Length: 108
Image 1 (cartoon, rainbow, N blue to C red):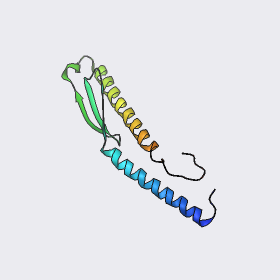
Image 2 (cartoon, rainbow, N blue to C red):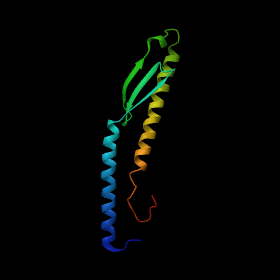
Image 3 (cartoon, one colour):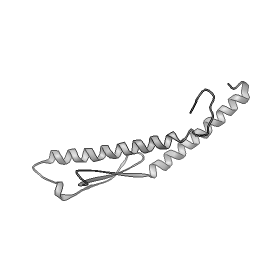
């Protein structure tokens, strides 16, 4: 365990280093795009790392005025798949942030 102001200064340096890495990762993630689809590719969405929907493509064959509910379900499914992919991308990116940083009391 660290003692005195020297230990606190080292801890603050490590925290600042981690904060910088987090901000850099957030910037990188916002520029990454994931794609997802549903209905065998009839509905396609693109989402960035901030979970913002970038595009939505709907093949005309899936548009049936007598079954709007199916189209709605397919759109929701594609968006949720994209959101899950973004979540996994974020978790993967963030898990690598603490590599090499030694913070007393944390075994990361």
